Amino acid sequence: MNIPLEKIQWVEFPEHPISLSKNLKVELFDIHSLGLKQSKEPPYHFNHPLYCKLILEKVLQFNAVVLPRFLAYQCDLMARPYSWLINLELLLEHNVDLLIELNLGLPLNNSLNIVNEKRETYEKVPPFYRAIDFGNGHPYRFDSVKLQLEELDNYWEKKIFLLRMKTDYLQYRYSYDGMNFGEQIDLELEALEKRQQSWEEPTYFSNMIWNGQINQLVDIFFQCLQIKDSEGHPLLEASNERLVKFIENTFCKKNGDRFSTATIRTILKSTRHDKRPKGPKKIEVRHLLKSPQKDKKKSP
Image 1 (cartoon, rainbow, N blue to C red):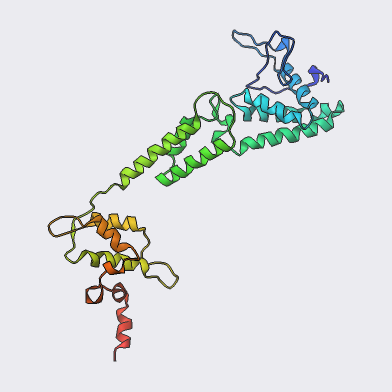
Image 2 (cartoon, one colour; image 1 turned 180 degrees about the vertical axis):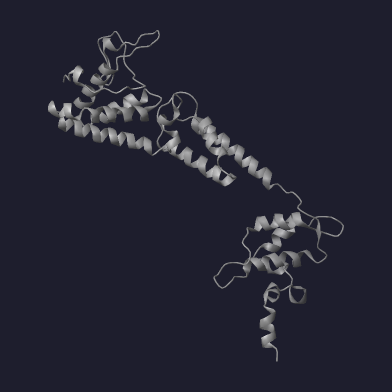
């Protein structure tokens, strides 16, 4: 296959991996030509038209089985494969008329479909991960992730974001040199976990004195968990552990001592009926919730 160089509408590829081996045996998927050697001094001239010619001839000569392998091989050589694939798609589209004139319409159509499919695999990675968004940077740069984290408001949003990013990275992993992105995500998640734990460590909100029995106090909260409104929603929604911490950190005895965490936790267990007050010692929350007007209507 020989596509006339002077008729090609070329595009500039910021990355253009080529083989400069003097060995006559060049790999099937390498782009090689003596005319591609780039100057080592400014202005670093590179023969983009020739590179486009060689790329077109490579892409159009491969069938549907070999072309994806060629694309994968080339992408592995680059820091920004997404950008390269976009440029390749543009190169094919810009030369549609020429390639049809050369009776290459069928391989052109097949190539466009395969290149588009390869590009879409990169689009599954979140936009700020794509190589084209980084300039000359690494497509999995953790400093860019940290910038995204700063825009999120709370722990849960950040944790979900990091887990999503790590999952995407592991699912669509490409061969890049440099840092281990997954390990850095783990370190950030670990730091977030520790920070969250420090926020949740017991801090005494107040010294509200409870002069009654501890099982009466805890039973009030237990009843609030059990009572449901007309739509089936509980009066109070909270985990037992959160309630344990709340009661422990909010109420104290008259002498200032805190109530036992183990005792509070035991009374809150649904199976420990024996630990909750009965009869006149029980403070009935349902009675406190009754409307005074309804009570008046019932009275003679």
